[in-house]
Amino acid sequence: MIRKGHSKMSVQKQCKALAIHRSGLYYKPRGESELNLNLMKLMDEHYMHHPFKGASRMYIWLTKDKGYNVSKNRIERLYYDVMGLRAIMPGKHTSRRNKKHPVHPYLLET
Image (cartoon, rainbow, N blue to C red; front, side, top):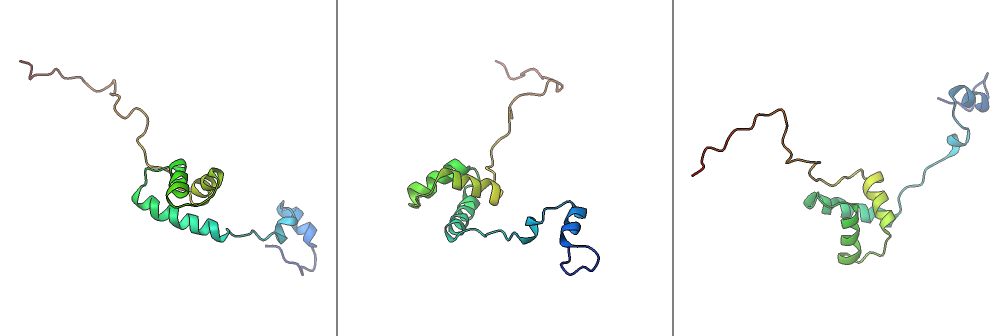
């Protein structure tokens, strides 16, 4: 949307009109490191077989079983933020009855 060779508006005025910072034009985000890419690949493969494991159990698996020396914060960031994974678990109060449903008597008493 912003053209550097625009004849009527400078880059500064174009950025001001679009309400963005000029520094955002020149920022090139760094990609993930090779270690992070390897960790994400391992976590993705392991998650396919164990979707109930969260970031803390994934951290234990990577450090104890696989031998990686990484922090829990790194695993949580990759697991939740970068990869967008969530552990599959039951919701709250799955066995609590609905008060609106009728309660039937037990008919097989002896």
